Every structure is written in C-alpha cells, then in structure tokens.
Image 1 (spheres, helix red, strand yellow):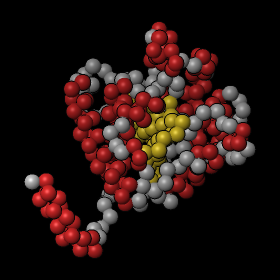
Image 2 (cartoon, rainbow, N blue to C red; image 1 turned 180 degrees about the vertical axis):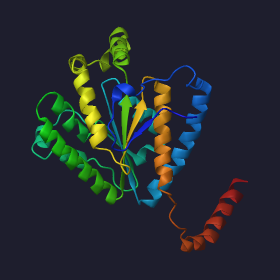
Image 3 (cartoon, one colour; image 1 turned 180 degrees about the horizontal axis):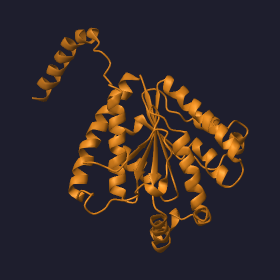
Image 4 (cartoon, rainbow, N blue to C red; image 1 turned 120 degrees about the horizontal axis):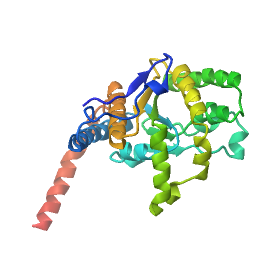
Length: 281
C-alpha cells in the first residue's frame, strides 16, 4: 500500500507542486488502511522494545506543518500503541524568558531523547527560521546562517546516536480553513481554536516560501525531510507509521545478549513454582 510521501534530500522544493491529498483512485478503502495500520503498530511496538532494551540509539521525530496540519493528532495516533514509558514528547511554544537568555537551539537540545527512547517534537528549533523570519525578527541572511547551524546540530546528534526524522505535514489552504471553521462551529472543539491562527493564516504565502527554503536547505540524504500529504488524516497517520517502522528497521536493532548466569536461578524458581502449585491444589 503506497503513500504519496515525498523524500527531500536537498533539491529545490516547490510546495505548490506537491499534492496534499489523494484522488479517489489512489486511496485504499478504510478497512485496508485500518488493517495496514494494525500491522505496522505491531511492528513498531516490537521495534521500540528492541530500541529501549539495546540503548544504542535514540530516534527523534521532528514534526512541522502549518496550523491545523495535525501535529498533535499524528503524534497521538502513531505512538499510541507503543510503551508510553519509552516515548518522550515535547511541544514548543513561544520561548520563555529563560530560553531567550540562551542560544535558540538550547531549549531543543535539552529535550532530545536519551539513548533507548523515541522522542517527538511538535514544532521544533525550525520555528526559529520560520515564524521569526515571517514576522521579521530575523532577516534572510541570519536565517541562512541558522540553516547551516541547524545542519551542524543535526549532524552532531546523528554522530552521537540520535537519529533525526523530519516530517512536514503538508496541507492545503482550503483544508486549513475547513478545520478552523469546524473548531468554531463545534462547541466541543472551541478549546482548539486560537485567534492567532487567523492572523497567521494571512501570512500563508510567506510561510510556504520559508518552508520551501527549510525543506531544501536543511535536507540531505542522511537527514532528509519527509513531505506527507495531510489533508487525509487516515492516510497521513499511515504514512508516518510507515516512516517510523522503516526508520527503526534500518537500525538493525537487536535485543541485548542473554545472561548465562541467570540460568542458575531456574531450578530454585521452578521449585518455588511447583510449591505454589501444590498449595493451590
């Protein structure tokens, strides 16, 4: 079952040429999607156990996308079936005073998962070359210097065992509008509505330009961007699940070797087990 995810490794990206949705003939039916998700969830659960027990790598998923692209929902659906103790998530909001007192990568570096863990960033250090650039708090020259710094930061993480997986959830402007309207019309979704989303929507074209630069300048064969069509929630989650499974499978994870000394404990434990069985009969 193929998804329309595009892999960006450094060539110029034009977002208006990349689909955000699936045509009727391209999309499997819901039952097939659900069956594929179930299979991938089982694989991911097993792979996460290997990752956690071996402690040789960490995997950091960086989720970016326009407002209403579903970053929270994707993280929830993709990692809901794995052991929650092995997944660390962080949502990046406006910087605090403490964070502003440090370099812009400081707050992100603090949240990088330790070896053995999966980490998921809802937004990330990329906000410091996106929203800051759109609103003019940094100029284009400073943004491009930061591209180089971010590339070095991700290279450093990779060389120290942290695999960085970057996912851009690609939605249409029409889809975003539908979601904003739904958040107002449905009383149970009012809490999701943020008036600032309407203000940011006015900068849609500039955000697209800045994202195109990020997806081009901060991509390589070793640390590509995955552009995932996200107008269709079910196919979005399936695509990201597939990326997660493929990433962990590529690490050739193995459980730690057996501990032979533990075998000496078995006779005693089996005897105790038999005693408990005899008592219960």
